[in-house]
Image (cartoon, rainbow, N blue to C red; front, side):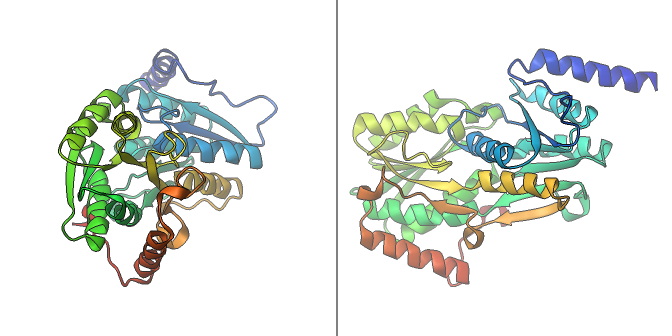
Length: 341
């Protein structure tokens, strides 16, 4: 018993030391009746204008609409993630959301230790016989959305050469790459896609300098449209295309506004919707563990069209893409899921 108490104390102490950007995690006095939600971001941070930012938008909207108390942690490194989760759980938070597949094994362990707490992991899943009833595994059909932006990229390209920059070289990001290439080749069988990854560790999500370096190399090989699925690292490609009058495709959040005129579109992954719905379910006592999947059929993925890029994509191309979207939903077009191989 003493060792357990000591461990809990050390975890809470570590949280204070490791999470310099943490907000106060204790249950707010006077708000005991509200649902307390804690969000643990990956090391890219909630201001990455991509994956983490999308999750944060969903959480903030929930805080505006629903009777919740929202707190978040931006761990400075991967070792701070577990202490952050345990601190939320130890202080009685009702729902803990982990942003990013890398947190899956950590959440599995913490969720086992706190079976009466609800958890949700974005992009993470385990084998069916290992899934926990108090964990919601939020997954997306990234390959479907990537197929559509691949079509747009191939139609826009003047060189027939496209680029793909992934963050961490893992199966999840292979889904983006495979879908993108299949979509591009569906409208131009001769198109060539140059694929590079920033790295093989968590640091790959937060290295815009490397992202720019890879983009410049791809441009040097003829790529005139580059799709990034690299978190904060992808922002380096935005600088590269602007300097060389090429195009980039954003990811996760709508990034069309980041470099207006140079962002052809964005493959929007509705992490915000998934986070909002999960919080809403917990508030309404309708939370369910297990796998929750978001695809084209329920607007879980999409391509972004707004005032920043409407003039860049001809109506005929949009019509072609919309037709393909419906065929994917109907099962007439099957996009390869690289993670299912």
